[in-house]
Image (cartoon, chains in turn cyan, yellow):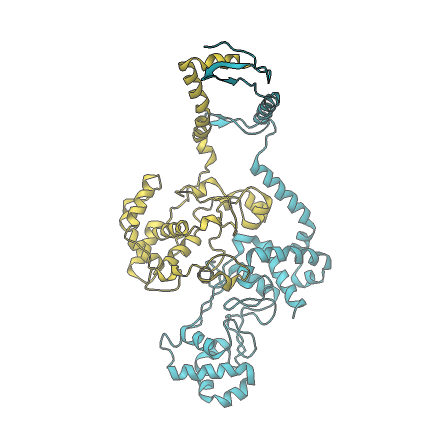
Length: 291
Length: 244
């Protein structure tokens, strides 16, 4: 081993080795690196002391601060609930008509309702609650299961054809597919139904007497003799311009031939009673403001 | 300052022992928490396993790369708990091999998606997301409806899960293919055994709305509809009450 020597240009020592006349500097690590190393180690040690860190066989060190993520989110939710308490109380205490008159509470309900609606209902009913084929428009028009706030609340709570024990249940039979009606009868009744909302029940009956006959024999049990529907059965009014699946002849044919059984999930267990009421109040308000 | 290190570097045995000691810290940090796993994973006696159809759906979920945009892990943060529901518990992914927690959300978290939307919505959404959510950037998965589900390997899938600790019984493994068909065809003779083997809570219905067939759509929707419903552990927990 050659002797270590000081490099005249940099002033640092060499390693003492020599490879074919080339010597290597033994440059020391810059002081700042030591500073950072010591600083980081110290911070790490302090963190170990303060926070949950080290496993100890069957348990772990809980840390001096006693921080726990679950406790933290619990605290956050509690303080959030406290901040909402004023309008939560207003929501719990009042029925829908009193609530609608309570401008102060309604302001908060509109804001919270819009968020809740966007996170849960908008996937089917749309952000503006205007619906989509198969998913009703909630902002305007008649609702199959009734449009009072109480009826809306119940629909949200139990759902339609859902897994809830009290679910609202309705089925439009497959009149064509299951052979309940002949093809001619189906064709007659769809023309009649198609014209109900355009020319009215009397004119449509005159134009399609066969269809009117089939309707009163097969359809009126649920949709009513006047075709105005029955919200207790979830049977839509066929004389208005609100169509869940579509009011053109092809879609009406599909509905009558193959039947329909729309589904809405139950929200009772997912959202809780208060949020269900909140959504009902929100939708009722939405309908009122955008008739 | 590094006098000790200079000396250590010159002794092969000492240096080797030093390297082993330093490297084993990493191993210790990874292995030691496993000894406290009973503290981390909550007890959930009602925890049930995925049915063969749901497991097949899970495999499709992995195959199509859904996990790249959807996480299945609700974190302990107020905004997540208020949006998605109770934060995820360790026990809820007890039978997830591999786990699909994910850390990237281009789409929403789906840890508690089960039961939130109807089967019809899921089918329409998978066929063309823009049909139901106009602003969605999710790709369409039309072939799920066209492809018949492969069931001949389901018994092997269950066996593999059993090897890594999922308590599938020999009876479940033997009947995997029949149970997969039966779960999506409630009127068929093969539907009878499903509830006996997997419990009364099992969803048995035509998920894709194409009775008489068993498509990949049935499997994926069956899987999506069970997410968050393998156990009620979360709804028994205290945070559920905070949200009320």
